[in-house]
Amino acid sequence: MGAVVKIVKCPKCKTEILIDQNELELAASKAKRGAGLYSLAFDHEDHVVIIYIDETGNIRGVEASPLLRSEVPLFVKIDIVPIPKPREKMPSLKRLSREELAVLCHCDGSTSLREISEALGIPYGRVKAIVETLYGAGYISKLKEVVLE
Ligand SMILES: [Zn+2]
Image (cartoon, rainbow, N blue to C red; front, side, top):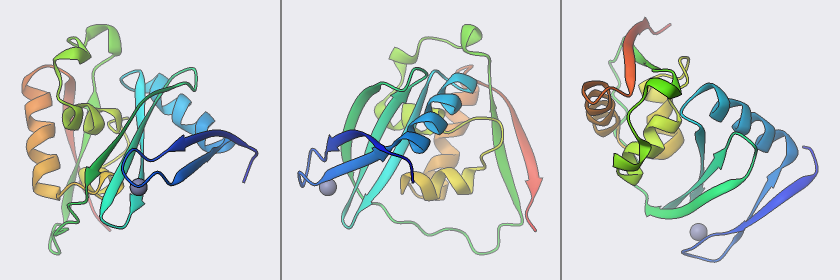
């Protein structure tokens, strides 16, 4: 654990969330490789707090959404890793809903749909539908299939 550098208050239950240096740097570097924003999710029992961090490590948004703990499919042997387009080739991020943005923020070319589903507390099927929408709308260049161990 590095030093705590950011304290964010949960908009729903007002609990303070501490973000340390390592976490912030990792999020900023992922934002740089991805859409320019990265979302960290924190489990708060019946809700999830999503904190958006930009490539310089600044907090760009905080939201709480009801937890939709999922049905992770048990028999999925093949998962999908969405490969984002380079940021300069993406359409404007302003057109996206918060949920689409949260999912896009996790598309870094190595994170699978299952991992995105777990990180955000959004059911797998919904993440898949969102990623397909993002693909159709030109935010994602490729959907790479990976075989699970
Ligand atoms: Zn909370």
